[in-house]
Image 1 (cartoon, helix red, strand yellow):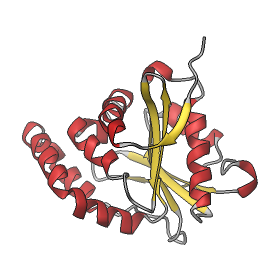
Image 2 (cartoon, helix red, strand yellow):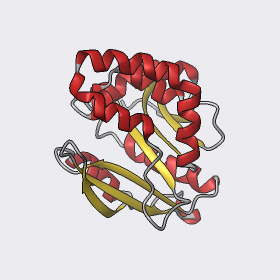
Image 3 (cartoon, one colour):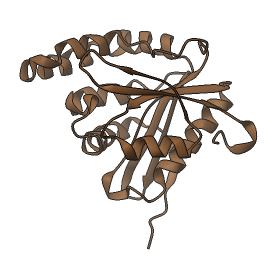
Image 4 (cartoon, one colour):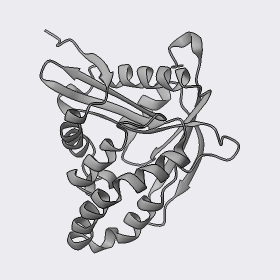
Length: 210
């Protein structure tokens, strides 16, 4: 029997569980490699910010996934760094000591301001989504995507964008394409990772998803 899934806003008590879910779901990807301490600071940053969109899927046992982002990426990440710099610094120091090769990427992560596509300065940013591997393929990701888009539209956004790895990431790319995201551009990071940048128009009459 399928467990009922409820969608709620992010709560403080969800942060540790979501950091663990994210690390398991995206093993080998950049944020996951930074460790659960860094991920906890990342998710905690979406609490108590008027521009944040943070939707959590949960069962009776607790969180099983989340979709987070913001309708004002540049100002959001500036505030995030000011509010959480000590936590990020603590988590990043441990990662840098264990894996010195990550230092340039850590520096860029700290300076990240959303990287909105040209011509879309007011677009919302779909920053991240994770679903517990035990619930993969059960429609949780679809529910999170639709709820996130609807919330972004309710906050006044008409367009949204996201970036994700182009390689070894087929399931994620297929998911976004099924939910109305269109590749706007592709680029390669200094480390050689190929990335896709997607954009999407948000609609009032389709729950924000198309």
